[in-house]
Length: 312
Ligand SMILES: NC(=O)c1ccc[n+]([C@@H]2O[C@H](COP(=O)([O-])OP(=O)(O)OC[C@H]3O[C@@H](n4cnc5c(N)ncnc54)[C@H](O)[C@@H]3O)[C@@H](O)[C@H]2O)c1
Image 1 (cartoon, rainbow, N blue to C red):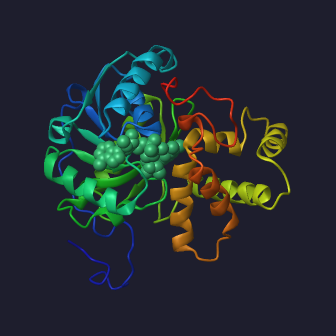
Image 2 (cartoon, rainbow, N blue to C red):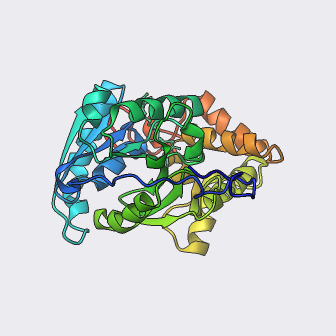
Image 3 (cartoon, rainbow, N blue to C red):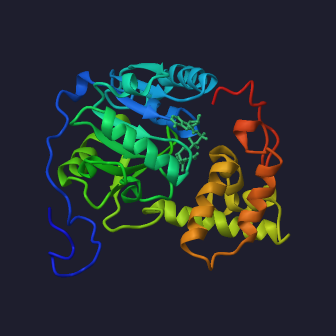
């Protein structure tokens, strides 16, 4: 294994530690497993169900497992119709992690944005998944190199960050600093067949590529409202008029989940203490009132079905 020091530069450069491994074979006949079936996990499982294969969802919560499978099955026909060569696959929920990952060629982690939890999950995945399985994180703001404490095969770990499929279908890929180059190349080639479009962050970057800019937009939009300069509705209206989009940042944050948006912003702030407090304080006030956005029935907007009615 080559290290930065042996390389003479002393820097934690991204690709130096990559060591080749065998790529997962027979991918067409093996499932993709998603860990965490919340807002994003179920959407990731949906996209991997569009080519006739099997996807699996593992979540600790029985109601989430049920809602996630209902969401994938209900949404799949319309999404498959938009994908070249699309064929509906199957989706199944699991309450046992070992069974959920057995045989999978790809495992995508989508549990809450908390570092201790991510580290524990990656340790478990490294122990339980097939030897050739790729282990990817959907984290919005943590580099996967931070999850490696209990991982013995870091060359199969990477960031694979989705946005809001099936509508917003870009994907950031980023090496853990050890990821086998062949795994990145495989995913760059294979993901588009599932209707999602990968771009590689070529250097270590908190927030990857597009997501880093989106974080700055959210932060300033929140500051504008926190300072009383505008309201969420009026900000979104102006945004939609100027950029000709269907929704604005506040509606989008409601879809993401305000608790998730807060976790992400807390991580950026921990890395950069100069960031303003008011965006986090505004998010915190909504979270404290259990107004988490679409998933709780209300957030910056209150025109959502209640959490109990919502399958999404
Ligand atoms: N919400 C978004 O728009 C969005 C977009 C891109 C990336 N992400 C990232 O995806 C990840 C998940 O976000 P989300 O919005 O889907 O969160 P969420 O809260 O909607 O879902 C997380 C799910 O993980 C489950 N969970 C918790 N601990 C678990 C464990 N140990 N094993 C299995 N399941 C467990 C929870 O029961 C919950 O259903 C985060 O890292 C977030 O940064 C979110």
